[in-house]
Image 1 (tube, rainbow, N blue to C red):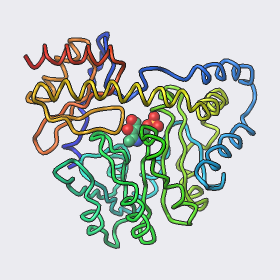
Image 2 (image 1 turned 90 degrees about the vertical axis):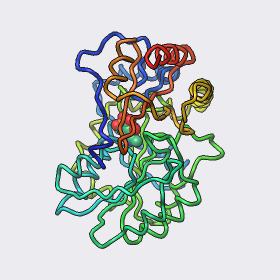
Image 3 (image 1 turned 180 degrees about the vertical axis):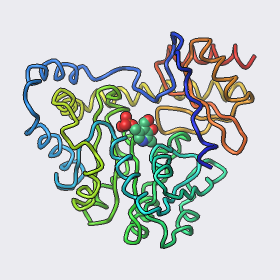
Image 4 (image 1 turned 120 degrees about the vertical axis):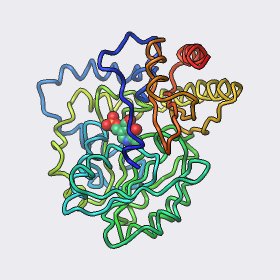
Length: 348
Ligand code: PLP
């Protein structure tokens, strides 16, 4: 199942792209307030960060209703995913997950000897939580879920996810990858920090790479029990792997709700436009709550991908159960118009 989900990677020599829509980045860039903080932080580049870690952790802890000791910072959330993969693969246990999900953690764990059990999705591309629960055995060392999910963009209702964690986490740790959580409207955003506050063995992974636009600056964090963070830490490079410049920019961005609201609104507008345009062409677009869209295509993945890149449009493709799909990141409205233009040329 994992091999099936493998990304067909962009060509080694990347042609000049008109629209870079293959990595779920923020097309609007970092917040002006973050840029200002970044420039100011340059003056502190000779100093090790101390208080800045405490400051950002306190802001997050207050929002989540947890303690700063429940937070570990990292240069992007990939470090947290990789640390968990290495730890839970040790001794060759099983990692339980869903099909059609983000496979970085799973691939690393598999390479290090873990067995991966990926439960099929429902017909409407959602996690089948009951089927996942039914697969829990003493061999399962970790459950890995992504919400909103990549690459489908689908979500699990917050109440279902919380109930699942309360039932499962006392038996097996649950890793919730919340890379795209910031695309929820604030009022609907699941507040699963409370699971950690309640002592549950849940690991939440967050990143600044998406709505904050920090994919290149690198900032993320884990929320978990302090003992779990202590367990994962030796697999990471430590919090000092985050630079003071990124940290200071992160503190500014985290507090800049106006910029986040702006990016969320622009993303929704461009996503709706693209969804409608593809639907009008007869494509079945999976409703997305994130900054990318997945839909089945009628061409072979590699041929489709090559032709899109040749037209200056960078996208990703996947094969699931023999069906080819296109995953296009949501860019600006102009970029999505270019995507539709390129798509029409390629599919004829
Ligand atoms: N988790 C998911 C679901 C992702 O899609 C990504 C990146 O695209 C990541 C984690 C890792 O991102 P980063 O290391 O930039 O935080």
